[in-house]
Amino acid sequence: MKVLHVAAEIFPLVKTGGLADVVGALPQALIASGAQVRLLLPGLPAIVQGVKLQKVVCTIGAIFGAGQVTLRLGKMVDSGVEVYIVDAPYLYKRPGSPYQGLDGSEWSDNVQRFALLGWVAAHLAAGEFDTGWTPDVLHAHDWHAAMACAYVSCRPVTSAATIFTVHNLAYQGVFPVDDFHLLHLPSRLMVPGGLEYHGQFSFMKAGLKYAHRVTTVSPSYAREIATGEFGCGLDGVIRARGAHVSGILNGVDSTVWNPEADTLIAANYSANLLDGKARCKEALQIEMGLKVDPYAPVFAVVSRLTSQKGLDLLLSALPALMEDSRCADAQLVIQGTGELTLEAAFTAAAKLHPGRVSVRLGYDEPQAHRVIAGADAMLVPSRFEPCGLTQLYALRYGTVPVVRRVGGLADTVVDATPEALRNDTATGFMFGPATPTALGQVLVHTVQQYRNPAIWHHLMLRGMAQNFSWSAAAAQYLVLYEDAIRNRH
Ligand code: ADP
Ligand code: GLC
Image 1 (tube, rainbow, N blue to C red):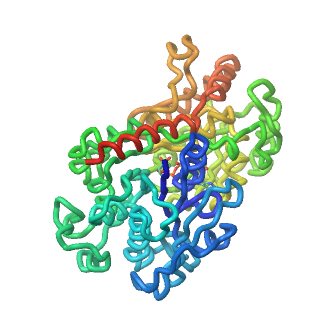
Image 2: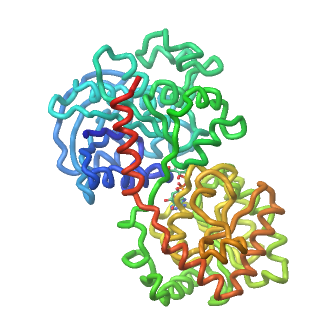
């Protein structure tokens, strides 16, 4: 089976969040399971520079406002996975993130930038741009790649079956109706049953309406997005797809996240030999300017600082936690970047609690490894969470997750209730209501359980024994691909 994955990010070249980790790892797992997989990525500077052995597959010419578009094929340096690059310097050769300029505002020509990506994908899916390799399945990730599904639906020839994966329904790619002509799509698609969305048009809706199958990255989030509370205005569209929407949990790339072999952390360790973890904790306390104390519980956050992640709840719960006599030695490390108000508030909290709260603003991959390895507990208090990867990495590193019971967090952490502790299934702590009070209570409870070495050790080992493997996810995707190919209509 030949599968083309289409996305805007890939670890380790371009990453703004978990999407990049998935796009870096899932193709490798599918290849290991016997599929032939290639990627299609936009020619962002890091991708053009980082992909090796590029050769021109086809010269596309002037389209979507770009004077010259060329399709190249090369290989990822580490994994060797083959990658098509849409080389369109006018649209992609820019500093900043894939979606925004250095000033944080969206690129004004994102319609053309991501329509081009989907349009090229559809041509590849129909066997037109590379006659030597025609995929059976086109797998598009998030709104950036979603328009591929609409382009495929408009093609007269039989082309690949389409799968659309929602990594985050909150980012939709909605643009003014006046830009619709830029898509080069028939106007019959600009209707409520098509791409139209409250007088505008939506890339996300293109994936949800036109893909043969829709997936998201956890079973719970698949159920949640069919409700008004989590559907971001698209729950009706999702409900209408019925059983064609499903959830497949993300995995952990153990070539990147493995405490036994990680070269980015102070010392390696395993479930059998945990001494290295204590060294990682001490190194983290020193690096972050925290009081060096092996007995102090260290909480950590590694996150985009956005309202999704519920970190305003942590800010509100923090003063009481810092003053609570039961938590007098508790420490907190925040590593993140995002909304300026959250950045400023965490910086102020660190000033107020020197030696106990430490903040590192910015994006730093090696530091994320040091934080996750060195902390005792990983905090993920999200309002919604399609899957979440940091709690999975934390489990692998014996860092006990403390999460809100929502989305992929609910699917991957087992709350340490008395019963779960008795049954030897508990891996972390959970809270329900998205309130500072509920979060504060679980933080105090976590500190109390941390003081009980038998319980804490049990939680660490149980977490480290979890197996969120990409091969399990790949097996489920392969079943879905077969189904989409056979029963696509
Ligand atoms: P999301 O994709 O919603 O941001 P995930 O938990 O799925 O959330 O993935 C986040 C990914 O980004 C993880 O690999 C995490 O380690 C990484 N990450 C988040 N913030 C930072 C940061 N400031 N520095 C380094 N890595 C980060
Ligand atoms: C999104 C989600 C996150 C998920 C990631 C990878 O960014 O916010 O929950 O883990 O995509 O699928």
